[in-house]
Amino acid sequence: MTADGVTAADVLPSNTAPIETMHGLSLYDSPELPADFAYFPHVNPQAPKGGTITHTAVGSSFDSTNPFIIRGTPATGISQIYDTLMVSNPGEPFSLYGLLAEGVRLDPNREWMEFDLRPEARFQDGEPVTAYDVVFSFNLLREKGNPFYASYYADVEQVVALNEHQVRFEFSSTESRELPLIVTQLPILPRHYWESHDFTAPTLTAHPGSGPYRISEVDPGRRIVYQRDEDYWGKDLPVNVGRYNIDRVIYDYYRDRDIAWEAFKAGLTDFRIDARAATWAIGYDFPAYREGLVKRITVPDVNPSLMQAFVFNLRKEKFQDPRVREALSLTFDFPWLNTNIFYHAYQRTESYFQNSEMEAAGPPSEAELALLEPFREELLASHHSDRLFTDSLPIDQPAEIRERLRRALELLHEAGYQVEDGVLVNEQTGEPLRLEVMLYDASLERVVQPMLRNMARLGVQTSMRIVDINQYLNRQRNYDYDIVISHFPQSNNPGNEQRDFWSSAAAEAPQSRNRMALAHPAVDALVEEIISAENREELDTATRALDRVLRWGFYTIPHYHSGETRIAVWDKFGYQEPFPEYAMDLDAWWVDTNREAALQRRR
Image 1 (cartoon, rainbow, N blue to C red):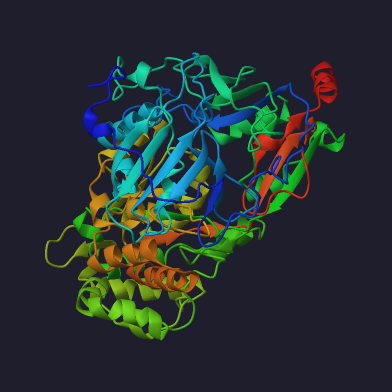
Image 2: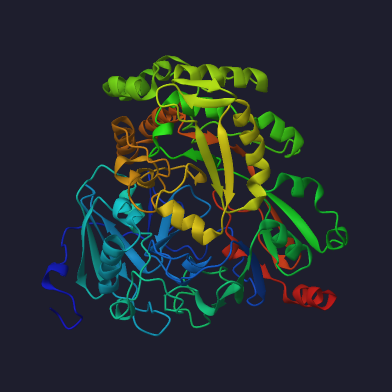
């Protein structure tokens, strides 16, 4: 073991192959910005520093400042205390530029990659960031962190320190074009701190990172505060110029969205993403808005629309039959919700890759069928139908609720259920079909209750349970639910994260995003096709095939989307327009301290 505590196995001779050292990486081509770029195009390099932004965090509380483990409820915003090896440019679909790493070398065969770390990089306690911290962070996250990391980095064979400022990642598979970009986003933790602390236990300690903000105040049940680090080692790097301008970033906790909305109107919080259509349509008739002190911003979505859905827990026998799942999905009356609750602000979400070229539409193409045919028998058995191979998408369903419920009852009869004395029961066991929808956000009750009423018309015995966020997370980790609401965000370049959404390996992994416990050989194969796609055409074909399998399997009841992000702010912020094309970069905003002082006096 060396003086740095690293074994000989962690240190390899430096590679001597003439591989070009690059300043950035891109998924399919070269990064747009040159090596000598001064700052990202969407920032104001002269943005002033100072001021405060107060966000809303909805939920009962948090009990940990460690977001990397399955235990505890992590504090909101904690990721901003950590730096990564490289950082993405929000103006490009998937390009990354050096942060902790000033240079990167990628083997042409994608068997390995090396990073040159910046010698000036420091943790917030003054200790240097070294290659040994990178090795330690990778091993710690994969061995003791959330099981997601083991899945996400599954194709990394090992990480080794070449010397104090050079680190090498070796890959067990060369099929994933995305894998080298994924490892650049590894958060780097301080080895000297975590070696003497229990990483697996929740903590409220303000432990050090290397990022632009440090933990300033921890008050569980009320708030967490982050302070801009004026001595931040990387503040003058091109990827950081014009960013991280606000001195204090505060997350105030509120138990539900209604209380949080009142707090925003009163000026107790500054910034909110407004996800409620009714509030956006008619809720802004209050004095501060009428006086121009609050303004609204809409930002069109350029990434695939977020799939939010009710998720069936396939661990429960009652949800094993796809005809039952399809019948229950027919009880979700989106047209009624959109007219009576949403002010026609939404569109029904149908695809897991909605509003992108990856969305399956029409009948399957020959290329899609080529991926599906090897699993025909398994798909026919799991889906109880060959529609996946023959029919067009979107799925043709009755629009009127009476017809939908009539079709649902037919499906339930086919699945072996009958109505006795107004109760839907299994013909073989005599057991009623019962289900519970579990929520932690009471505002979604208005979406759930109409669906449960329609289920009750079929004879299904239903209930809804609203629990606090800690109980919700604990029950979710223990798979103790029938139906929950989950989210499946997609980028324009899906990759390794798909394993955590759909794969058999993730089905029983604690805290994976495979909430439905989907385990299907065709899905596993299609996920690997996505990860190993060599070009855009192959990627689109694989995602469309996966989209078909998921949609015809009725594993979820999809919700709705707006196609834009709705933001409301107290008018004290500055920002450059137009916004970057592929992601909202709030880190590029700044506070006009004169306007902030005027608002404070008014309040």
